[in-house]
Image (cartoon, rainbow, N blue to C red; front, side, top):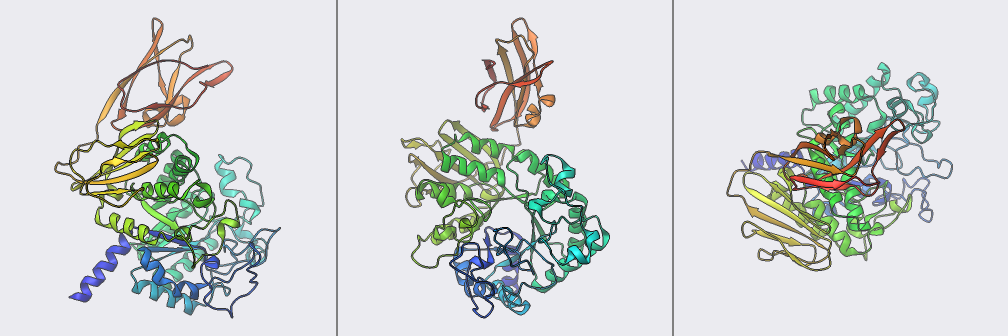
Length: 544
């Protein structure tokens, strides 16, 4: 009976993770010196010796963080030599998927590491590179028919350029070739069986044919129904990202739009409306998609270099763990690693003399496990001002409220009942305090005594003056055309006023602008985006 309960617990944890952790293998821990090929720790672009054996030795650290899923950078054979001064240690310049990269260890060590992880309730996510291979990789001469002709990506909005062009000049694979598809399917299936991995992180999702992704997904899930596909589409536009999710039917996407919103607000002092807009655009994503939130990764500036203070980082972290999705932590965040650009942002993990964020990460992870409303509750913008945001989520049992105060003075929130838990980026947890200090973030959990209300809509009336040209209201919601002037709200003239009505989701924050057109083309009004939230009538003049 006890064994059955333990199995159920491990299965539930694997199926519903609360924390994803990413490791750049070469930079984490050097477990074996005898496989230190090409190692030069004095060179930031060279190999530094991290390997699978080193990860296995640090599984206690991963367990202390509360890691559920561990995503490793590519571990299969890849190019070792630098290319035009650029580093190769990251592993994304693959040669093939046949063998484990000798620099990282052996297949036996991979399986030993996986077994150790499993004993601690941690499941493996494999990073698979299907879009390209390394420069001068063996396949380029063995199977030249597997590749698209070399071409530069000139138009990043053109699907032909994206899927047939060469990313950073790398040989671009033609996934429509049947022998290539069979190779990828066979190799992926092989490693899934070997490692019992629960998911695949797919690199460069936007550069591959949708049909290939869907076919591979369907074929693999026929044998591994619980397998999860985590897609990487390096795009900060939720409109583009949501389309990719629908087209590929992937299970999860890395939330680049929210990453940029969080770093803009907490590190660059952008208005909190940036966060509100991104949260309100969740309506675009297909139901069941998990958005993976993150503050930094190996391709972006480290949050500790981007933000002005450690306090700002703490605010961003609490906000990340206080909203929907699956939080991801990149190795070294708990150590305060810094680096604005590659390869400095890919520095070695520091195991001594660093600021310890382990306890905070583990506590926030456990909080999400206990209160599922944080991961999947129905969201709503409750309050929105220039420096003030209250975002609420609710399910059948609880209500969560994450409050961002970017002003100087403390403010008191308006709660319907006493919180059962309060967490503040400045100060300790408390069940009493509803005061949010200046330049801080607070998270509140309340019991929900009523059933969640059905999604409601409200009518907004626009009244625009001061122009003879017919204006169109365009914005970040479906009802306002998703920034497409051809699909926005067309206003009609009544005397000297242009008017129109639109229905919007209650509690949504929408960015919008006015657009006019003539024989010269479309003209957007000047200035920052306007904000539509909690208004039934807007009367304004168009800006030149």
